[in-house]
Image (tube, rainbow, N blue to C red; front, side, top):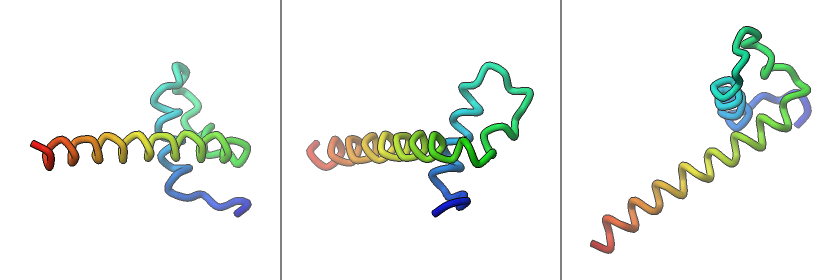
Length: 63
């Protein structure tokens, strides 16, 4: 979907903004040319969070 800014892009742009040492241009990652990298970073972060949650649930259930 061209030009669509979704949840993965939002998560990715927040993470990229947090790790960017130059935070003066804080709207830089909202630019359409960063949509692909925002989406990739967002999906990776969601997968990591889901993995941690599933690991914790598994740990509690198999106690």
